[in-house]
Image (cartoon, rainbow, N blue to C red; front, side):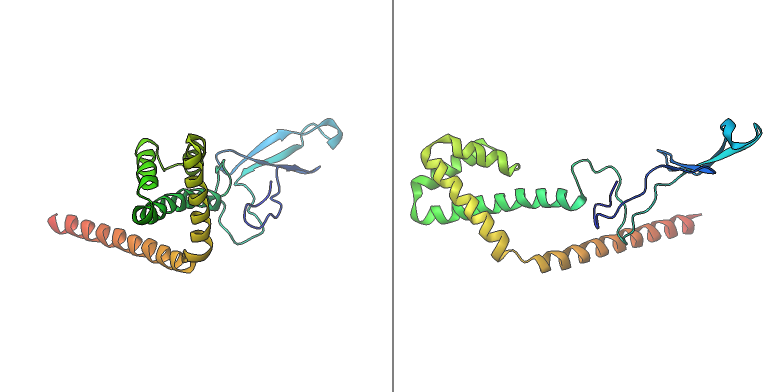
Length: 187
């Protein structure tokens, strides 16, 4: 196994002549005495087996278990791709409304019949609809790429995300303390 952040190796289950360390699925710390093989000397000797938490990677990042589709960052990137596609459709619709009313109506009808939530599926369907729709799909792909690379404010996203999480955490903790203090006042 390797860390999804720094790609350093995470040691797996290991065994030596004196002990065995196995990863327990629950992450519980338990020790078991396991009978030793005959070549260890005496039949009364045993081997200590430890079921501990998974070894930590050699980087400072948190371990996120059970993300089948990759890292949390990849999942966020997929969501952002879908969002950029949605924005590109809105931008193209706004552009078409002012100079090509016919294409605007066609794209608006297509959007009303098809969900924009899955960017790739939406664009595949749009490309296969007709030659005119194919041109609209190419325009949407250009706009989403240009917006993502040139216009989207990545630093602002990071700053706003940090602030929103901190503010939400503070509000939840404050509300909880107020709730608890009112309960104790009532008693």
